[in-house]
Image: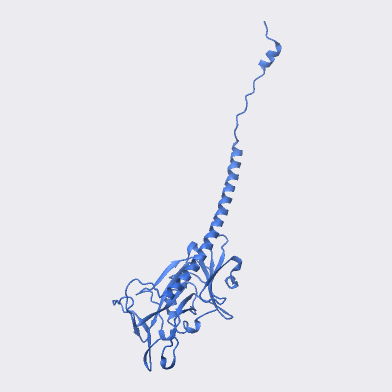
Length: 305
């Protein structure tokens, strides 16, 4: 007996299998491309924010290091790798090799202050900005001077930088230290402001004030403090020897250079793109021994010159 026609027709129609879920190769490639773009964008944004944060923190840290130097001068602390002998001579302090005197017993010499130099040890920091690879170095020198000078009344305590004949011992003995600014921050320029005059410099420092001299060279009583001072005829990237020679030259380092209105240190980031500008100012606004930081559009105009 034949089967019903309707049932035959139904059975004769091929059954369609349900399609399994999945993606084509093109769809997978599009998904990966979009995901990659989003990931790169997120990493770029994160890296930019991290770089900006590091730069801000680094500039604040550099400002703190300058204040540390102020405190070292105030407390009379200086870097030393061991005992040494300091003797007075007609040309200034000398340090005979092979002789050692316990620290605190070099009665011929005194601690005057410290000098901060921006730039490298070996002239690799180009002040024109063409090579900033080593402009993130800074060296802090100790200034040593004569304790007494000879007058018509005999030996008297020194009352000026010229009389003290300052030197920067940085070889034997070495009373200096060198560090790096954090996060690849580098200096682009540095300026001394005296009234309406703005001059590029490569070094500044802090020096003690000498007691004033009264009649017959008797010292006027009073407590000692210290001043901000600049080193004339210096620029970024000069060697330690050059800075030392400028400090020993009365024409480029003397009491007339005390108390500038301001020292401006112009900085630039090394981990952000584009590079961010910043500045640290010392003095200014009637605050002789203070530091202040500025970023981006707020930096002093001289940093953009």
